[in-house]
Image (cartoon, rainbow over all chains, first blue to last red; front, side, top):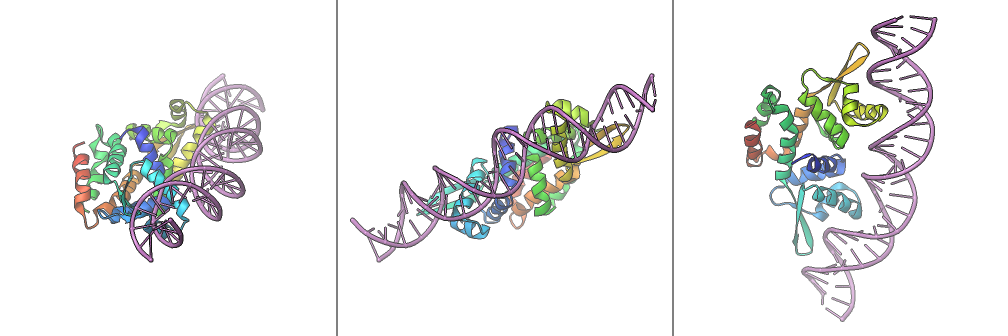
Length: 109
Length: 109
DNA sequence: TTCATGCATCGGAATTATCCGATGAGATGC
DNA sequence: GCATCTCATCGGATAATTCCGATGCATGAA
């Protein structure tokens, strides 16, 4: 993950509909949810939500898979991990004291 | 950090100029940099960069302090930590196996 | 074959973001 | 007082985002 791949990921998450959808998918790992279920949860139109989903997919945060005539969506935790590593990297280089509290709180969960 | 505070933070970082400025401030902790130095690094107009800085400040990612007639900007690592915790929380609840690789890579730095 | 379902994509309208130059406010130096 | 420096804010132009209904394209059922 570099600047060019972190920016689309951040932009994808910087929208209430997309952030909610992504978190919903994370909570539904590893089964995933169909696009229709996500549409219902969003309260938006099917076409509108479809474009949001495309943004998440283009950023690598969501992977989809055909299943009959449904499209099953799954969160890509690897991309989330890489994004967090990218954000944390600058803090940690040469000054671990900045990231230690972060690690302390992360390990508790 | 909840959804309403995470969204402005994500939106603030989802712009090349702001992400670069924030990372530059993180690397310059804890001294900080003046607004003018950040403007020079951005290559943008002073007024344009000032609005970007206001976005970062409003999201709580940057704190500023007067020093003479300069404004010293500093990264707020607490907000970054809270944002990362917010993003990681959903992965970890009930399924530590999703976040373990993340922690493993974070502890190495 | 025919019909219905699930989803992506197109066209267009409304909103928002981004950028710049110009101006204003506060602090410092002469 | 007066000029200068540093930065925030205003107006306005351009570009991007967001949203919806309509359409198209598969898949599965009748």
